[in-house]
Image (cartoon, rainbow, N blue to C red; front, side):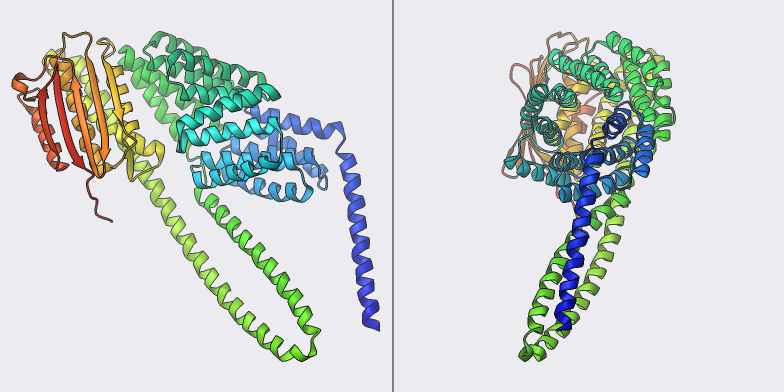
Length: 595
């Protein structure tokens, strides 16, 4: 009888506690209507956009310290502004911790708008730190939420992130479609950030120069209207880069000079200050190189190295990976907790069955033994995964740094060759120096792509050939050479791409030199795959090879180089004349022995 009263007392205590919690929750929600809460949320967000993340942190921390128990959509936004401030300070590990905690809070309180905004933020962070798998995972979660949820404001923000993901990792045509959708929804909802983001992505995805610049100018304008002065400044630098690549060096230099004062208005000694100064100096070095101002170019390159050194490492990759692992373990623990609750209910039922006591004892003993084994195995696996992840991160960072330094060293060699050529004043020797620079540049572009894409096993042939052609176009702008490329979506390993790139560079260099007097030189490059065989075709509209045979320059050195590189690829090739010089080659990807 006493047992029944005990259970009734427990039920009354639980219900009373529940009532008190509900009452406290109602009073908290009333406090959320205070205008100061909304003001702090908006002000901390404005500080972040205005490149003052430390002020955003100070304001949010001060408010949350005074109101530790406040739970409402606005307080979630204030906490999210703390995470965004850590993003702006490049402390992505701290940001991920806060965002993960806020997801649980938003779910519990049914704050759907804030929950989806946090998913979008996590997709952005994982895209920045080059974890496309996790970024796509959160984008997929958001897509499922939108099946039963309608909010054009947040949906426009989602399409900005979806477009950005496809631009970097997947389909650029699809990225352009999503960018246009983000821009349309942003205008309908009045979300300035989505309008700016849509214009930015369209600016990067549009090949037409005038149209691309127009999109970037719109992006710069809306960044400024929103108060995102860093975004406004970066778009001006991107526009300057567009003019530089289009050959309008005076306009590019004028824009770079006009942005100098804006950069100096940033908080000195902050990461964004050094990264912006590095980008600004890098663009000035390129402009000075194009204008032939070598001394100014060297000064700008030294500034790039100095600010890169001050910029330092952006992310604590080891801590981020540990957070990812912790989240995975947390999910498993939740599943285990649910299973344990089911076992408890089962045990209670079994305890009520007097005849099943012996069977119950045996089941509990077996379950405990299995749990110990599982726990021991889980601990061992977790430890092994942690060590493997640390080793992988170290090797990836080291390999990335190697490619970056190789690229920088090769660029330095090219700059030294250019300076030496200028001092010699010998046309024949200068021509040889240019040829050597072309060859070195073709190798440098491979290492640059490996470093930028963080993909060390394969090289994107289409992207590589595009960069190589742009490089030749920038170096020979006075000739107005027109390139036509038709390169399939092909990924080749480094051992195959390097000799292929040198062959292409040698062919283009030969066409330019053998047709020096021709002002409308046209060069066509094609690369396609047939099963496991790759077919490369090259044709120009010049005067062709003497007797149909490619001899190259410098007493046949070009032909010797191509023959040697073709042998490395075990390739079949031939030269021919067809209204110009032609070259065709078939080869297979080289097999690389595993380390």
